[in-house]
Image (cartoon, rainbow, N blue to C red):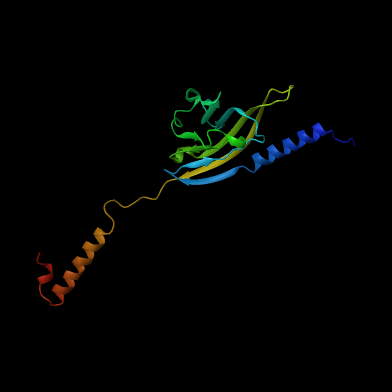
Amino acid sequence: MAALTSAQHVGLFMFLWITGSVAAGESLERKSGEDVILRCNSVTDAAITKLEWIRPELEEDYVFFFRENRLIESFQDPRYRGRVDLKDPEMKNGDASVLLKNVNTDDTGTYECRVQTHSNNRRKRNVREFVRSVNLTVSERPEQPEGPRGHVGWGVGLGLLCLVVVVGGGGGACCEI
């Protein structure tokens, strides 16, 4: 068996690292109305020239599309417009994480982060990599009782007290209002 060259070692390492990152994608659970950070870090700290956050089940539009140092909303699915921001606008150290605001059950699904960086290598100008996937599950918040809390309980308690006083022979003074 022939020995691997250093370039082959690097290629094999990158393949295994990316495969491991995808296979070990993060799973998150949130309640409807909460915010969530979808984490993604490039393997290099080179300047990110293009960032795509997608949901494979969305046909053409992006969850988040960043190119030439700005968000391009015209490529963004309308359901995500105004709800997705970079966690770190400067994307220091390859941080391509985004904040998804006010999630709802329709946001449940798999999100994939794809990053393109500018390489200083003369042979490869741009390097595109699939960095990671995030599985998000959003559940409904439990229903909150309507009306002021505690007021019904006080009314029932006071009514029972008056009933006990009247039935018990204490007179009707308690209930005369």
